[in-house]
Length: 328
Image 1 (cartoon, one colour):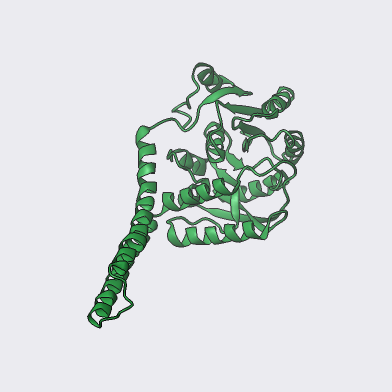
Image 2 (tube, rainbow, N blue to C red; image 1 turned 45 degrees about the horizontal axis):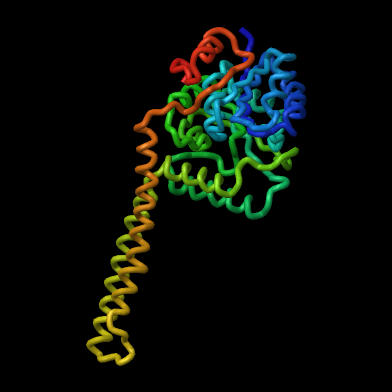
């Protein structure tokens, strides 16, 4: 049986990129024996879905998943992986910063025995020094604090074998950090380096607030070290408060005329200790919030429509917007 290679592409308001991406992708996949392009429209409000349907109508290898609303980039990747049927599953963004022409090289590494092939960036065009620096710092902090072995300069662009994909599909947590989850799986790995281009058109879908949230998911989902740090800070705050209290007692016994009665104890109690308590509660709240998300057991996503799929997948989503348990 010929190899089937699935390529998963999340899209959100990418009408300025759709045509160019599909053209380049179809040309790039020519060396592959057989392939399917699964595009997940993450609740776009522009013409992204309309343009995708036109391409799917002319090429049956292009399949579309339309979310009922915007669920986010990591969930869109999850849905594409759930519905992919290939011997390999490759995730790539649509902004053409990551070249689809590299995918045949990733497939070659899979043929050589790799279960996960990471596309590692050796340069990043069109990105500010601040974004490059913060990304580098975050990956290093995650490796130091978390129980995950993810490459330092690899994003979501990667290929996974079927057994790696099945392992990932078994992980259904709500707050998802896919890069860490893939790193957690382990298995045999290979790396292909490339130069990352500037975004072809449009604007980034990861502004600062979303980047911070993604970073928080990465740290909290793969490490309890923040709780240990919070404990350390609490002990340090208590120790410092004790030291300041002893200093204030000493000053009082020495009869310091400039000592304002009650000032030292008030400042220690309200500002320092109170601040540490709120900080610690915030960390604990992050973990409790994630527990709450998991306990509710809501589906990760809802699908409004699928195009290009046949058989059980098409029949299921014609009846229900919820993921098929057999697919997830």
